[in-house]
Amino acid sequence: HYHDMACCVQQSWFFFSDHHLHGSLYYTHLHSWLTIGGWSMKSMHFVQFEDILEFGLAHVYANILAFLGLDLSHSANLTSTETQPANRRSTRPYNISINDFTNMVNYVRNDTYKLSQLLRRDFVWPQIWQRQLAQCRRDHVCQIDLLPPPISSVPVFL
Image 1 (cartoon, rainbow, N blue to C red):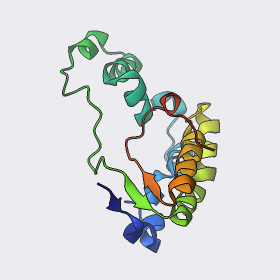
Image 2 (image 1 turned 90 degrees about the vertical axis):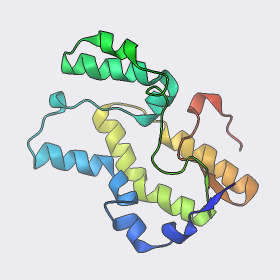
Image 3 (image 1 turned 30 degrees about the horizontal axis):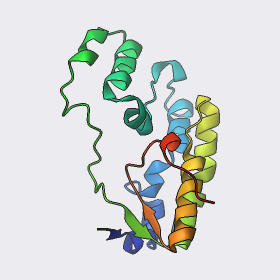
Image 4 (image 1 turned 45 degrees about the vertical axis):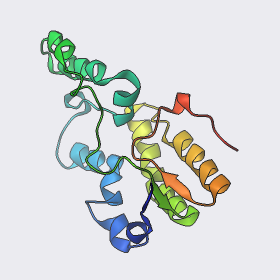
């Protein structure tokens, strides 16, 4: 069962509202915190949602505890419910057109590149986008999954 996301993606507020895609311009937000807010990179720890999917919440939580200088033993005491990644939105894929998908990717592409350069981290989002676009072309509609499997576990269709 799939949702239709076109009703949102085709609206201008989807790209420019802080509650939608504009909120995903992570470099833009981080840059303002560093330049205007006076924060330093040493005072921040970054967690990538995909790391939770790939390595598990206990591993990610242990890294957070280590960054904060707290006891790491708490990360071993998570219940099975606490270790399941969740998204407060639907976990079912959304159907959108290839054009809308391309517009979404183009909107965040430069910001994503700058973020990976600043953090010296490969977020593999371009590879995920390539895999999703291949699916779009194959099926003539994009089925965008908010909880994608790790990039290493899914073949790319070209």
